[in-house]
Image 1 (tube, rainbow, N blue to C red):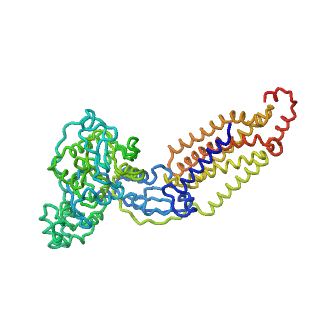
Image 2: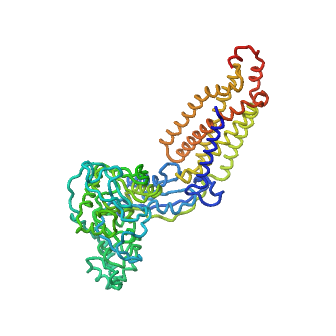
Length: 630
């Protein structure tokens, strides 16, 4: 063999790994800060937030609370390695704890109440925007979570799917817009109903809401009567003074704006997007009502929700192999697919005189204009793609995504159907759950154990003991680099349970040394020279080492799948360190043994640690069968 090649590959692995550690996305601060792994609650403490749940003003039932807990846990701990704690306390409270400073992350965890897909039927300017006209082909910055786009979003057949001209494709399909789009499977669809189908009515007015409206009417005074007469939005571009009669509405709070009729929220020019965004969570959740929201610096009016978050089976970020662009694929459940197809028929087949077509035209398009479907998460329109085909199968959202924004949108689609509304309480700092003394005692015990292993290895194996420690050092450096990188990329958090997993893996690594070295002794005892014994011992020991490590990895995978919480972290750490140890075994341990086998020191029984076995082989007669065999 050529040990230099394996050692060169190992060196390349180190270079690539630590380049990722120091320069990959997320690496910032000083060199020391870039080498800091992400530690868990039990080691450094963290941040805790409380969320109080309600369901249409009443405490939610147990099933919905558990569903909400699972969704929040999936958001914060999607891969099971961030070691977040999400627990239910009392009948309507969920407590979330995250390691380190995580106020911003906790703040956004339960903001989304429900996912809704609504036809966008009208658009008007936002008085707080610098441009009060409906957005042009170059709209203002999109809301958080939506990729920036150079034109209006669109929904169209996925890459490789047939266009309208194909007999097997969905109906229609215009020129591809440069911003988000969604793709269908290739199935023909029937003629579509008109988009001017009966519009949804506003939500019914409850006694409580009636009282709130009366209070708002009293607060705004004469402006209320003027607002009630409006049938269309007031255009401030032609007459900037046209908004003066409605100035009193600018002082309303989000809760007061929420009490207004959706048509009034839309028509009154002095009701801004800022006020609409301050409405309470769940303000536009009613699936049977028209609602008002904001999108790309404009107020938009949305029809009833014909598709909801529960209709989605799965959303996933993907890298399109044909275009090289990130996309988000959408799969719907059986009934959800039927509703989605019906909604896209309505949007795609709308005529130029229908409200949704006119609204979509206001945003501009690089291709043929069709109605837009707004994806609404709580009070936020996270995307509003134009429908470029009737989508009867799997769909795909395309646009100016990168890996991060595609994953964020997929997560919002996957976890948007929280069945209850949350009111977030203040975040507070919590201390480490494992005291400093216990942690120090554990690390001291680990150090003593490693010291005893070192003494025994050097006493029993001499030079081979040095190989053991060099190998363990290589494994430790690889593991540390992987910890730092995975902490940034997938949120892997190191806890005391993870440390236990790494320590257990040391035992597996030590076993592989014993197997190899004892096999080497057997080969020399049979009369082979050290140089001949090393490759032969490796071939025989390799199978046993691979089998033992494969079993450990399988156990770690099974444990990771069936467990939750810190046990998942232990399993992940055990599997990761075992894989890295195998890498060191093949790229360092065997090549370095091959190099040592050709040195004079290796032939010395006292230095090499082969002791009596090597001395006995050196006393064999030159003509013996074993020497000839060697």
